[in-house]
Image (cartoon, rainbow, N blue to C red):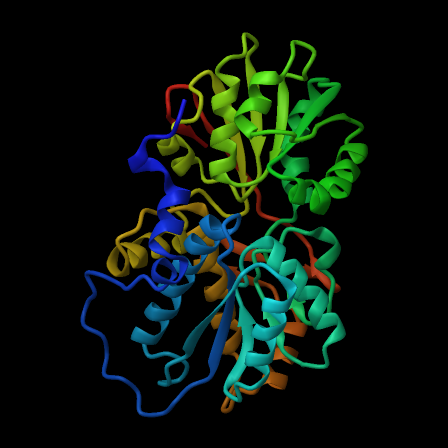
Length: 381
């Protein structure tokens, strides 16, 4: 069954152009305070606008933009606005190297914050290990557990291992012996297969991988009665929608588990199979939660952007808020070495209910929630 033309979100994004959408302008703004006369420091956000990452990058960037615009409207950093600069990359290593050279030439840039999505964030961690550039890489959309203990990268969101463990814990308790794994593309399989296998081994669950040889919809149609009833999907929202449409032809009830790149609201709009229950992990609270940081996010987003709340844009908002809280501990000047040193202290923070704590060089805890898109289209959390 093809997607309705009005709901082909990935095609819409690409058709309009990545740059145009990523530079969304705010609407319904309230009067801002007079612009400070002194120029403040600069924060650079690197975002991957390649087709496979654009959905996540766009939402994450919207949340970050909302947080920085609101921060400056409230006076910025000691009455100086923080310049929020966005550098777009195409997902390739050469493109990322060029972005890093741009950062090197920006004297006012004191930190990288909110790199998105996961692939480019992981590549950037590797580059910073080799590069002499002493700069803090703060709160990226990074889910590789092996990358979280570096001296210049400071992740605050749960790793894939923590997400999968959370999603599968209940399944292992009830004795699910095997788990099917579907990768959205050969690239996802190459990048994440070893990590997924490691997590499953820790949970003592057998993995049954499914290789993509045609389309995801056809793969869903080709599953047999011997296929495990519970499937882990590693990929994004449009790809998951295609896969679940193929599951409509299955006689057996299937349950699909997606990770943090999946947006259940969008999946519902794209028309996923109504015969398949889809669960997805989130590395932030529910966007309907009552905790202060979520209420602040919803109010700021509604005031500045004509966009619905999503877990990914909430993550972008929290990433920026985390950087702001640490920057406010520095005075009177803010330099790259000072900012890097401040983050290396890894002080615990409570961002309106979203707690960030560390033990030695690593996060001491991870925030993971889980929602389910029921067959009737409701999102349960």
